[in-house]
Image 1 (cartoon, rainbow, N blue to C red):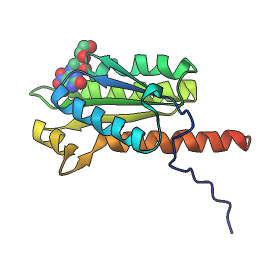
Image 2: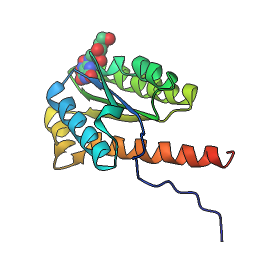
Image 3: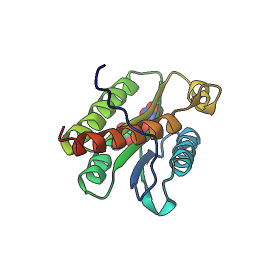
Length: 160
Ligand code: INI
C-alpha cells in the first residue's frame, strides 16, 4: 500500500486566519467574505483569530497578503476579489498579475494563501459564484486554506 498523507478539515485550537478582501465590486466581495468567515467559524476558528483587511481592488490583494503571511501571525491567508470583464482588456492584466502575486506571496513565505478571486464575464456570473447557483467561492477558498494549513503542519511534523 502506498503511504497517503491527507489533511483534516478541523481548524480549531487557535488557528489564526488573515483575510484580504477587495472593495471593488463590493456587492460580490462582501458575499465572498461572508462565505469565508462562515466557513472558518463552522470549522472551529474563533472570531478573535480572524483578521479582515480591506483593499481597494483585486490588484492590491497580493501585497498585504504577503505582509500578513510573512508576519508569523497567521496560519493561512485568503484573498477575495471579483474581477468582472469590461469593454477593454484591463481585466486580463489584473487577473494574471493578481494570481501571480498571490502565488508568489505563498511561495515566499511558506504560508498558504488561497486564491478566492472571481474572474467573470458579467455581474450575474459573479453573483452566481458568490452565494448564488454556482456556490460561494469565498467558502471554497476558506476550505482550501484550512486543508493546506493542516497539510503543511503535517508535512512539517514529518520533516518534509
Ligand atoms: N478591480 C477589481 O477588483 N475588479 C474589477 O473588475 C476591476 N476592474 O474591472 O477594473 C478592478 N479594477 C481596479 C484594480 O484592481 C486596482 O484597484 C486599480 O487598477 C488600482 O491599482
